[in-house]
Image (cartoon, rainbow, N blue to C red; front, side, top):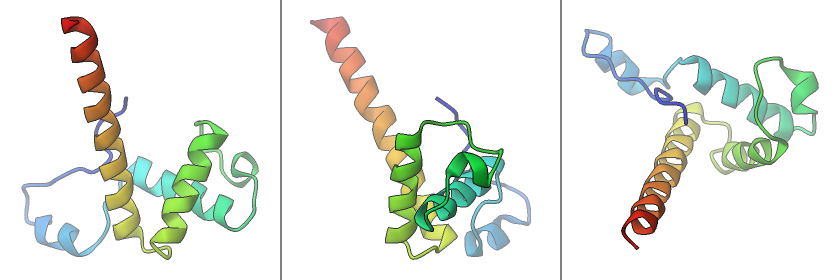
Length: 99
């Protein structure tokens, strides 16, 4: 699992980042891939920045369409989804270890 999808800054740019989406490599790559799939393009032909499964490309394309292409909301939803997956995996691991 990759961490750092959304990065937080303690510098003076913190107020600026609150108004605009994070410009991390992953956030931009996901947006490029999501836009490509949403418009009917092959994600692997559209960008070399995407190395995930085709299933994930449909997941992020769905989130892209739900947010209307608003990158801030898109990044938020992807982050929430990734966090939820991590929590579910941790709960499943802990219940398997204890039982």
